[in-house]
Image 1 (cartoon, rainbow, N blue to C red):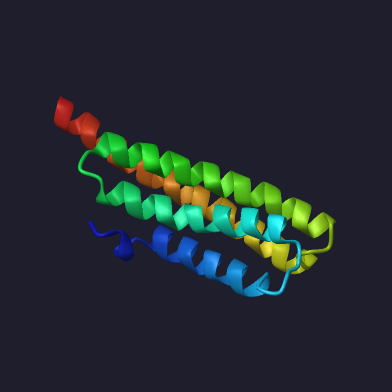
Image 2 (cartoon, one colour; image 1 turned 30 degrees about the vertical axis):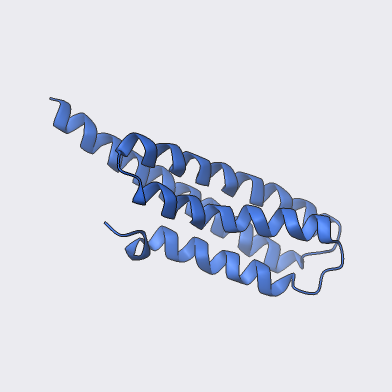
Length: 120
């Protein structure tokens, strides 16, 4: 399976692109750096995990990706509160990150179940 074929990778990459484009002119470089890096980390960890040789490594990177989703979501809540991110857009990003996280959980379970079945 190629990471480019995964809907979860496509959606997380699209989210990251939207974050970068939306915050392009934000002058708070510390905040902008943190939130863009966490959004970018979601798709990057999916790609790295899927390309790893072992399922154990893949599961670790998918876990990192879920962590990046949570980090991104936390930063988005704060960005909304400090008026860096429009409320409606921030809520859209929060929902998308929750859905991506659920997709990552399902993918991880699928990989883990595949291993469990081959162990029997």
